[in-house]
Length: 115
Length: 110
Image 1 (cartoon, chains in turn brown, yellow):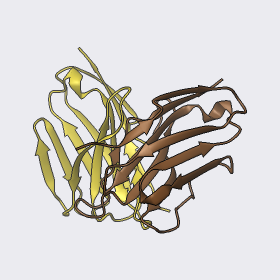
Image 2 (image 1 turned 180 degrees about the horizontal axis):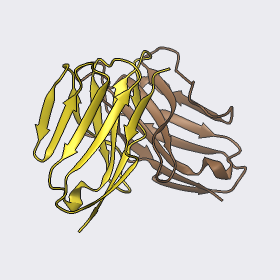
Image 3 (image 1 turned 90 degrees about the vertical axis):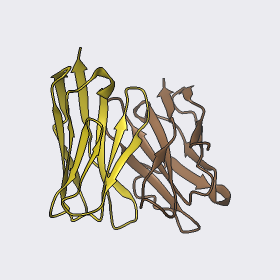
Image 4 (image 1 turned 135 degrees about the vertical axis):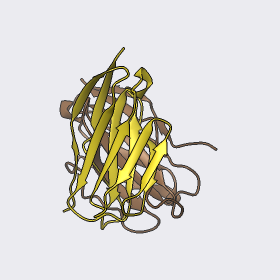
């Protein structure tokens, strides 16, 4: 079946502009996660959605970052007034509510470059 | 909060040599998962270990879960260039999420 998809695959923007990154999780997966990965670094947790519960926003680095998940499916990560330090690959992952507990399936990521 | 540490951070090996990465958690884990990220790619789930002392094999890869369920290891026998990438371990935390280790980046010289 279809995996997690993300769009765009690459985004180049100018400092100060807003950007929106989209994630389509695997159908039926109730949990959705956003991570940030700088070049050669590990996975930095940003935000977590589980079903209809309030999202866990504890990883968002500043109030310029926000995310929504509409209808329990598609999610959008918005970065306002982008800064050069926001340049990174943004990864989305989804997880089923059953089976191998908490196993995450990652999308291909969006590479964001802020000039 | 829970911390998951991995060592080494980087490892260069000659093709054919063995490789091991170690994962240590500050708390007892219900399970440990391993992921592989190829250069330019995204993390891909490899395996999950659940039982204390569990050992699982996938071809040349051997995964172990410690008796105390706080540590784990991944051993690759006779590395190949296709093994290149970053290997992450991860364990569930109290918030029903995974805490990822920092990863071990494996480089293989042909």
